[in-house]
Structures are given as structure tokens and as C-alpha cells.
Image 1 (cartoon, rainbow, N blue to C red):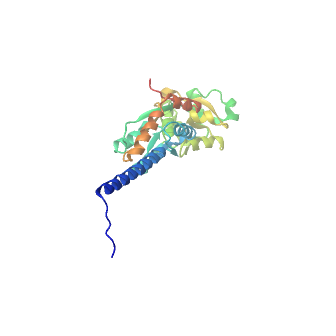
Image 2 (image 1 turned 90 degrees about the horizontal axis):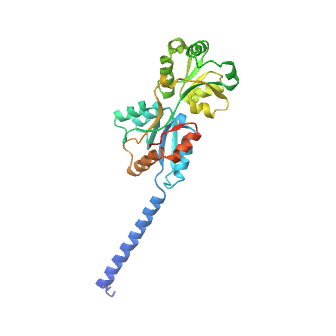
Image 3 (image 1 turned 180 degrees about the horizontal axis):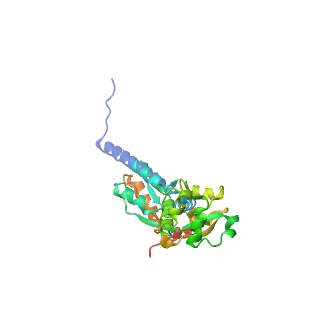
Length: 274
């Protein structure tokens, strides 16, 4: 016959307390590991940010936050519609306010838009052709030049760069005479490629001309002929709490003095609040 097992009340209490302490220790350890490896955030950004955004992301994730940043690039209009359709973006940086407002109006933004940087609009030529066209800053000379040949620009229907270009040429009373010669690209980077590889005059952002070795700025469209080109960020709606907080922190950091140095290195005009 098996002898009965006798457990004293004090021993039982001690065992329960020990088990609770072990469980609490494990929970703290798991929480520490979770905090040490925060959830990465995914940033959807305008394609004209192809060079600067990875540099900003590397600086941010190498700092005190430790949060990794994944960057996905496309035309702003394409991204906005992807987010509307349910794409999982933690942060969206658009090349204009229009597509930000598009998402805000449809309830897809958890924050107001925040301007992080600016740029200007310029026309580029293959660098070997610059000397042959010294007077293109004159609207009439530009009109005659564009009316005589095909030129590249981003598609106004999906790309802010294309929309700004059309607005500027309309304001300068050039668009109606040259529209038939426009060769549309899906985004501003592809428009630049049509200049670099195809030899076409092209309208791009000043930052694109700044970093190209094959396309050089021939003239800048007057800033008064188109709206301010502002890069605006929002945190899309319906993201989990941890990602939303990190995304908001990264968006705020993009207007910091540290980020301003990186924006300037890549030819942008930073927006640092006073």
C-alpha cells in the first residue's frame, strides 16, 4: 500500500511563490527582448526620395530608437491608392499635399500632414547639350524650344512632378503649344532616365538634376508658376499601436536638425521648425 504524501501549507505557499517569481522573471525577459528588438516600420515614399530616404532611415535606426525602417518607393498617387486598398504602410511620405488630403478625406490617416522637406522644378538636358541652349530661362525661347521636339515629364495623372510641370507650363502660357510633344513617364525618376538615356529634354525635380551625372539643369521654372513642392508625411490609419508610435516618432525626427543635414546633402530644402 502506497504511503500518503504529506505537504505542509507553508511548503505549498513557498512553491507557489517560487513559481510566480519564475513566471514573472520570464515575462520581464520576454518584454526586455521585445523592447530591444522593436517592430520594424514600413515607409511608403515618393520615388523622388529614392536616395535620401534610405540615408534618413539608416541614420534613424542607427540612433537611440533602434527601430528598423523598411522603405518602399513609387509615385505618390500609386501609393495613396495602395493604402486606400489596404496596403500596410506605417508611414507615407508624399511629394505633394494632394495625395495626403486624398487619404485624410477618406479616413485613412491617423495624423495631420507634416511637411518634412521641399524642392524646386527644373528642366534638364544631356550635359553635352547645355552650352547650345543658353537662353531657355526666357519663356518665349522655352516655348519655341519645346514646340520643336519631344520632351519628357512625369505623368500628371499619377505623379506630382508631372502635375507641377503642367501647372507651370500653363501659367507661362506654354502648355497648349507644346502638350502634343510631351512624353509621359510613370514617375519623375523615369522622366530623368529619358533624358539620361534617351537624350530628351526633361522636367524633373532639382534634387534629381543635383545628383545626375548625365543630365544637367538647363533652367529652373519660376517658383511663382507652380505651388510649393512640399514633401508631406502622415501615419496611415489602422496600424497597431507600437508601429504607430515609432512611425510618428520617425516622422517628427524628419524635421530635426540631424535630419536637416541629410536632406541638404541630397539637394533638398529641409523643413526645420523654429
